[in-house]
Length: 200
Length: 234
Image 1: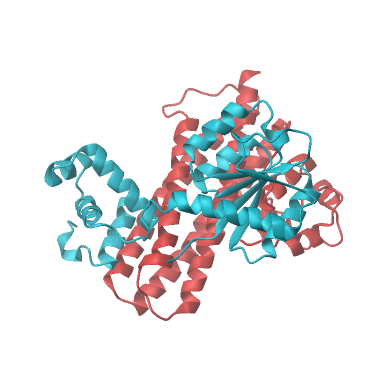
Image 2: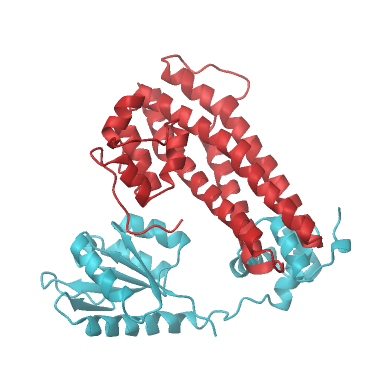
């Protein structure tokens, strides 16, 4: 089964600490990409379009923002958070899943990250595992490329409009294609519809 | 474009060295109408030579290097007029350089692979291009003249069609999404064999276009629109 690389974001103002962590992570055998985010706002912005698996954060960034962190966690249940323990702030179990100090060995830090990876992945397992469309999604797609609107598709398949919308969302997630004309090309190249079926 | 590590550009840095670390800056120079023979000039000296504000040049150059403009920079009216020149020049680049190039690659691919998908892909691109042209024309004929009048101290005239920043934003999202579709179709879905060279050129051109369009919308959204709003308030 294919697993995409782990996406790690580091929220830490010190360049020395960021670069150090990045070096440890990138030189390890972890299959991942590392991004730096400067503020909680930037993180929220980023997570909207790029899913993040693990956040490594300086807990100073969380001070007085507990509510926002909790909200973030609810919105993205697969996000795992590791805190950098500077010995200043008490470990807040609600906000971080685990923490490590800057004096821990690289092996220890990587081990912690791998544990978080397991957590993040096990929550994700519940989701679909491959990018193939389900028979239902194929039916919805066929309706779409034939120029039907959501309501018509819902009537034809005897499902609610809400369900059609959900299928459409999954189709886009799986194929990476949003526009109707793009989906048409997709459907033809996958032989879901033939070119003759489509109204000119 | 893959570029790491990133350099935060400052006015005392040598331009030639900066180009060496990120060649995309050449495109920025072209949009500013600055010659590539930058000799041994620093960013500051180059700006002096071409009468471009250092603040503006450094902000835009840093966008190309992957740094967002931090907060609001105080841009002058003269700066903003230069921003409009810059944006207009990038429109020329899309219209008469990048899109014809991409279109030619797709045509060549289609000639080698007269499969239906390729025909549809060509149609998809042509329709997309028509939409982009419409947006560029909208900016050139409505948005930019609106800003230019505003910046030249005039009141924005009440013409038939008015500029709206909302409409502006919607166009951008659309343009970006379809480009993404095109890349995904080529990378994940359409079966084409051989012609790796041609397909690499096509994909590369799409990435170059995507990158410049991204910077283009950052400049509009982070520099032009907020500064324009401030001037409107004056």
